[in-house]
Amino acid sequence: MKRKCTKLSVESMLTEFPDLRNKKVELYIDTINANDIENFLVDHHKKFRIIIYSIFSNSRNNDLYGQEKKAKNIYAMKFSNKENIRIYCKEYIIDGKKIVMICKSWKKTEGNNKKLNNTLKTIGDYDYEF
Image (spheres, rainbow, N blue to C red):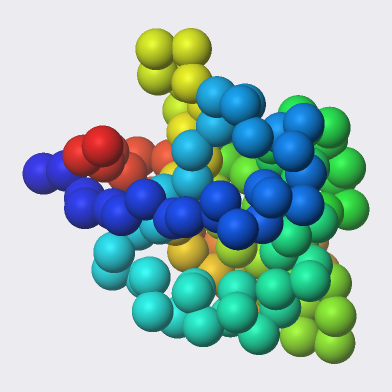
């Protein structure tokens, strides 16, 4: 069964970066975790804007948004404050367009523990309706 998602509007953020407006990138958010993730992103909107710029410009900054080593196509938005929260995303390429699916938040601990590895594998197995 495919999971449901909604498109996340970032148009207001892209007005600050006119060179990125025509990029073939779309952001979606998993509806099951949407409320928690959206509330977190509103509270951390400055860092989120920087991460969005990194995603749309395709400039990888692993301190902000980087691929997880043990999971295929899984990336983490890194909010390295005192809480050290990660928001895990799954990237797709569909018809030449990069789709970033925002899936789940996680409090990062040292190293990748077994529970996190299982979570990343589960996210990797998610299939969505676009």
